[in-house]
Length: 510
Ligand code: TXA
Ligand code: MG
Image 1: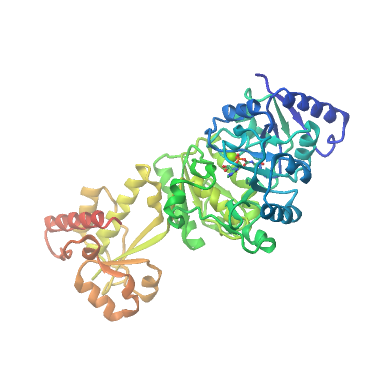
Image 2: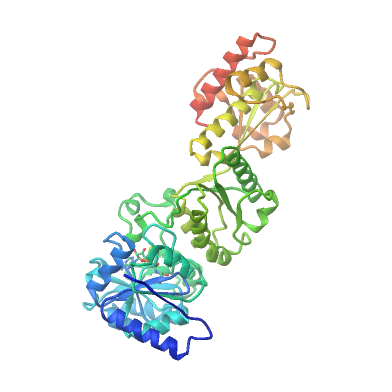
């Protein structure tokens, strides 16, 4: 199939040429064909919603699973009656929300009527309806004169298209026509709200947020989407079929780092540096505020200010697609603020990352002088982290490691045997290490403090009892024994000590 392209803009929207092309679209849709059109959320892949055979073609073009229903798009609120058969409660909720948010990025799920083929709803008794705000979308729907079933115009599983060039990548040769209306304003798919249940429930967050809906329908709720927050039955049998599929995923492995903005930025900067040493193609998605932590060589995309969900939303999918185009294999993303539209941004990012969201943590090893045991522990764990990163476990970058000694002399050199053992056995250069004395400030910054022996723990808590809840012996975490002091011992004593530390670090799952 040869795909036709047409560009609409402010200048030609009311021109004869556009009217002619839209009349042509009416023919295509009337004959059961497919037309891609711009909306304010993302591009939609449209077919006649009342023609089951035409709708089936959408599933083929996208490679979409057969049990994931489509949204029906209309250009006039009254047309909702052509595809629905609402109960009184649904009608009341529908009217209120339509008045507040239509035209706009909100899809309402209500009881369907018999004119909607099973191909649209995948056999469900409900239908999702949306009246887009985008002028070109409405002009197209009006021109073709029938409700339009349309999912996002991407290949299933890929990020939704927010530019016609994205659509071309995925749909060229698979659809009859593509209408290019420029960049999509919102950049994330519509909020999907189910009005058929006991209380209205947002199934997919989007540009219309729960706070906004609650102003109209105070009883409204939303589905949890983070794995750890979801009830088990929702994971097994999601309320919206679309929720169970892999989504928005670029080819790269994506990890989201959580924590305070500065810590996250520093860990990401380190991860990029580490990737460079491995010759891996890595990139980062950060906020404007984090930019100061990065250098010119770093491949970063600033997604907007931390509290600017709108800008982040508009950039998200295009950024993920760009990463693919550049052959990026590792993406490090900062967690965004989950309020307003930022909540929907995080929902999409979370799914792009395959639910891989990890908190940044700081581990501090403590011994007496910070010249042997805690020093070796720090470098051994750092080495293990680098190995895990090289093996593709890029989430390991979230752990920052340091060490200090209760009676350390600041700036003191590490013992020669310890440096040699690190070099000989682990191929790690620890020669630049200098001892650090434990201070309240250092302890304060750590999330987990691990001492080499029970004695160290006792002494440390004697000085700083307020940190009791995060101080453990390495043995406690690894179900092992104290790491004996190799100081003044032979090279072999140091080897044994290092091996013991490594074994415990692995056992403790650090
Ligand atoms: O912004 C949007 O909504 C875009 C533009 C093109 O309008 N469309 C879009 O469609 O994102 P799609 O197919 O990619 O996502 C539709 C979502 C899916 O998660 C689907 O499972 C859900 O809406 N959905 C549709 N009908 C439903 C129904 N009757 N019950 C439950 N979920 C439904
Ligand atoms: Mg989609």
